Image 1: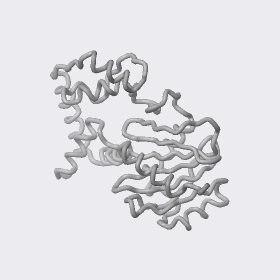
Image 2: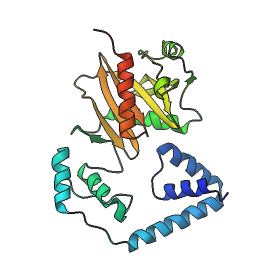
Image 3: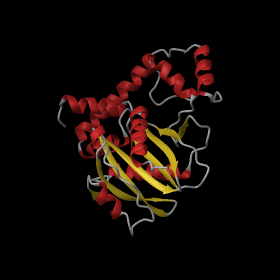
Image 4: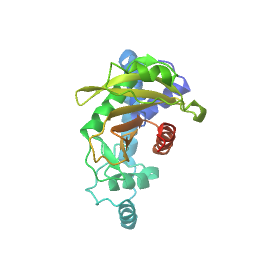
Length: 255
C-alpha cells in the first residue's frame, strides 16, 4: 500500500461512507488486492467507531424539526439513525435527513410522496452496472449523429443525443440497459469526473416530473411525448437539475 495523501483521503471517506458508488467499488477492489490497505481500513473503522461512541449526540431543537417538516410537506416519520453517526457538525443535516425519510435502501423521493418506482430501481441498477464496467458505454462517441442511429435495431427507441459540451456536459457514448425485461437506450454524458446516464423508456402515463435520491446518487425523471426520461448521476442535485434543464431545452420540439 502506498502512503500517499490521496489514498489516505479516499480511505477515510470510504470508512465514513462518503464515496460515490463507483468509488466504493474501486476501493473495495483495492482492499481485496492489498492486505496492508485492508488492515489500515479496519483500523480506521475502529477509530471512527470509538470516536462516535465517545461524542455526545447534539439534540436539535424540536422546533427545527417541525419547521423542516412543514416546509417540505412530509409527514414526520419515526426517527432513524443515520449511517454517518452522531457527529456534532452534522446534527442539523441528520435531522433534515430524518424529516425527509432518508434510508439506506430504496429510492427516496424528493418533492413527491410517490412510492419508489420499480422502473426507477431498474434504471438506477443499470447506471451502477455501467459504473462497475471498464467503460460505462457500449459505443464510445461524442457525436450524437453516431450514437442515436446506433440504437436502431437494438431498441425500439432512438433518443436524441444533443451535444452539450459547450456547457460542460460532453456526450461520451451510449449503451443498452434492461428495464422491465426490455432493452432500452441509455445516453452517457460526463461532467468533470462524474458520469450521467440518461435512460429513455416508454411512458406509462401519469408519471410526474420529479427527483429522487439513493445515498449519493440522484435521479431526475420527466416525460416528453410518449417517452419517460431518467437522468442518473452522483452529481449533486443542483448540477443534475441544471443538466436536465439543458438537455430538455436542446431536445424540445417546436410547437
